[in-house]
Image 1: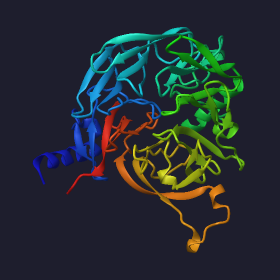
Image 2: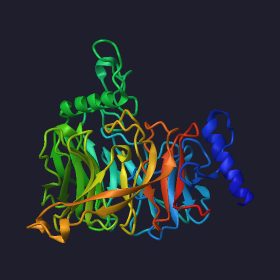
Image 3: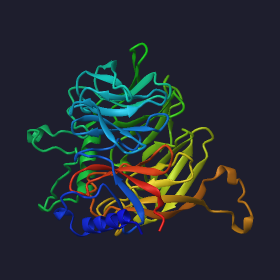
Image 4: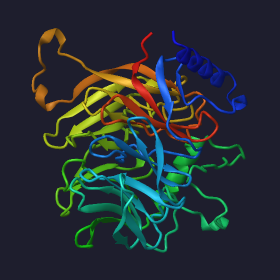
Length: 441
């Protein structure tokens, strides 16, 4: 064993035993519980990677953008070096383009009911900045595959909402909010609800408020703003297909058991479709995302809530459905799929979350396995039925020291060799990479 690996293992052990006493944790170490190499990419506390549905990489996969306390930074995937790209702590990093080497950002932090703002594109190589849109209000969540349309959501005034879309409570003088990771509420007897239950109650109040909302596109060529969906339901989680420039996915937000959540629609307003219809009381589905090729919408499915767990897939072209069973401890706040479609990853969850997992605080690697026909005799009309399967799981990162109010939001690198995630197990939020392959002994 080399000296570098010995020192890395010692550093990892020291961090697990006494994180508060460790002033300068190792930038690279091997997780003592999993055997996988971890690299701390960020050099500043308070750094985070993008949300798990938002592209952070250049088309060639050689660079990645992250949000740092002093602005927007670019990471070289060759050596993990970090360079400030656009200064400004108030800027809102949005995503990278599917064709260009641009990263897109907004002139202010997300505020769905706020006023006008600007969207800019910055070349990740040269740092050259260009304004590409003046947006009337709301927030921008996605860009289409040919980089001609922005996709956003807008809560019409005079509604007042937090950056995560939940309601600011004017009855309390705005001193107490229900959202923004500050979910807290007491029961009638004065004892507190769990964080998860307080969050559900906050989402319920926001849903019941019935604010008029819009999902809209903003044309980067003509500047035209077009309303695609208008509703008094809470509209959220807007995403363009990564490959079909005319396909939109969005959700009806709120407590998942109260809503028909996942929807698709075309940019001309046609083809509106509910992706998953409930067949069981208290069944829930959500945290939907596209596969890398845009062929499949994957989502967390529970039949019923908190009892039986699946990662479910719906093929947008054929309508075929696939469900992979997930064990309670392996249930994850978010999932993602590898670029070659062979693997999935999940970020686990703490015991207060919906699965109430006794040992769920891990970052996972999942290998999907299909369940074959009994005695190799196919079921009649099998092509019309759900394809069942399950996951073989491997633990990648011990997340016991992470407070899950900071959700890891992991994603595979374009070469499939690393998984990017955020965590606060070093006392503040950093962006990390874990190697998919185990370190050779």
